[in-house]
Image (cartoon, rainbow, N blue to C red; front, top):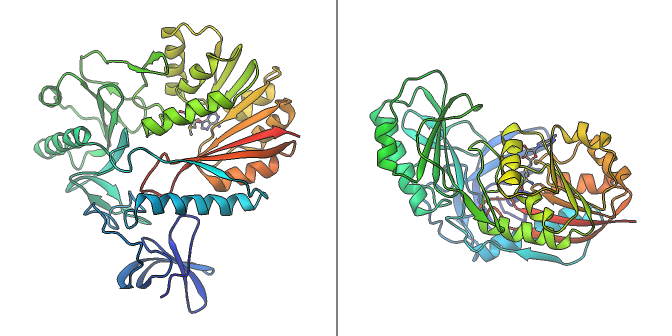
Length: 404
Ligand SMILES: C[S@@+](CC[C@H](N)C(=O)[O-])C[C@H]1O[C@@H](n2cnc3c(N)ncnc32)[C@H](O)[C@@H]1O
């Protein structure tokens, strides 16, 4: 099959018997034999089983698990080419809303070793990631998207799981780096495990947590957590609270949002652990943060208290319920929803808000353009791309809308 184009997820696109076929890990101009992994009445999906003709842009992937574990999409091209591809994909999305302006690109300073968090699944052979389009877990020894110290923690954790024969009882392990490293074991059932030896091995800067199911992690180590010092604030995240995964790109994104946002009364919707709210509060008279998650809300309240931020109001709840009932006239609104974008009730509340500007941070251009269409009192003025997730098909988009 000849790859004639790219799809919205950066995969190669061609045709088999007149039917469109999306082939992961291929580049425009290549010829491949395809193993079909999914078939519907309107399209096929597949992976290359043999490369017949390679593109000049093809590079040797540095990771032995590439194409096997579903973690990365783009190790078969240079980082510069990946950025170009992501820019073209974003341009295609934005064409749908008539935007053909220049997109400013913010690449990541690291294309590997940038992630501050990974979530691994457990199988009989230890920890790994799920294969693309499948629930098969591919065990890994190392992940190139995290740095060497995090990989060393992963190695110690893998040995602990084997030594304690935890494979059948364990669902996930989450490893997060903030100031120290945090390791969270998610079990399928109640367990009675002594983590002292692991804690000693991992050292003083590492906290261990456990839970049954992915709610309510309990810290099992008796150490004090160091705080993160960034943006002129000190703070900590609860281990299960949302946090942007690429620290350097996150810093650039938050600084950019803070630079753009104008006015005294600011709404930060889907505000997570409150770091951006804290940054915005330095410039505004009052900032309202609205966040659903309890762990995120509590992290945001702690951040507010630790840094004596008196002009920040953290509200916990669904944006769908909180925003329509907020009797506040906002100058500017920041929204940073999950991949599905904003609910219609949120869009309606934004349309009625009277805000002069909406700064939309999106990790999914498809839901972003859908919401831009629905934000009918606003005009898309500027777009910037922040490559928060190198080597994967995802990126963050910053869209600045002004009241018409
Ligand atoms: C993409 S994250 C952004 C978080 C934050 N802006 C940041 O930079 O860390 C989306 C956040 O929205 C929260 N969330 C998801 N659905 C929500 C809803 N319907 N209402 C309020 N918050 C929601 C999630 O818990 C998560 O913290």
